[in-house]
Image (cartoon, rainbow, N blue to C red; front, side):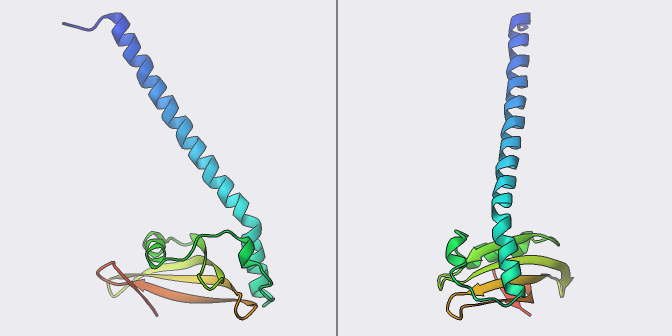
Length: 146
């Protein structure tokens, strides 16, 4: 038995509504992620400025509300890294840091990420900037600093 015209029309409308809902949801998620980036931008600008000027930390990190560093989170960041990707985090000792990937390459069959980082240390009351290279181990479960 073939569906009636009304049933076919109803199916088409439901499919269109589902697609519209999906598009609206994706746009909303994009706007939320962009607003999170824009909300972070003043803090990102400030840590870069403070680190490059080697200024005191002076409570900066306590104002960031950045996520706490985890080994697993950093490993995930390295696995997904592309030139220009970045992450921010705090450490249990109160320090905070911004990492930005500057190069990604394969070395001895491993993905290696070179990145610049800007950090502020509450313990030393000093901010600074440097760079590093981390390579993901062949098993993908750890990384090694080069």
